[in-house]
Image (cartoon, rainbow, N blue to C red; front, side, top):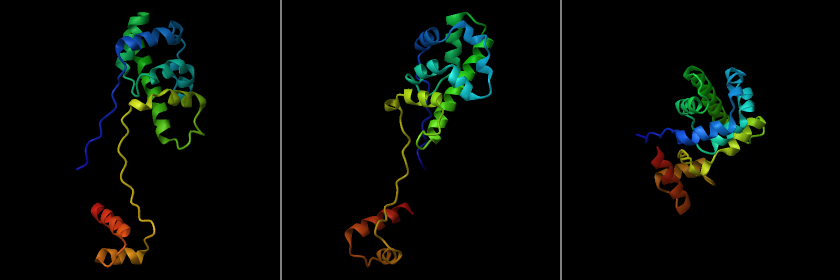
Length: 167
């Protein structure tokens, strides 16, 4: 049975989040309703500086941490802070998922690309990839003879043993 992959956790401390909220947001940001937009590209573009600053700290944004920071910083009602923080968490997750799907980054919008570039990926635990089979130079006939033990090339025997161990 394969080991269960650990889930990314929000490593953003509440006091750091509160500092980022005070530095990159203003009370006007909560009255303009941009965070309520269904298009995450619009949300990311409008709150780009905040999302980039958060991306430098963590790879997962916990809405509760942001909501508490917003309530402390601007004395807003918790309901408004919760809606805002959930929108930020979704926009942040949107950027991360776009980056995971992108091959070259050429088709990403500039705001999403900016957030992705802000991620500190040295601290992120990358999932282990499945081993790739290297069957270079083996034809179907040599694979058949190697399986019966008739092959004499040491490299092809190693490749065949690797292949058989995966079956």
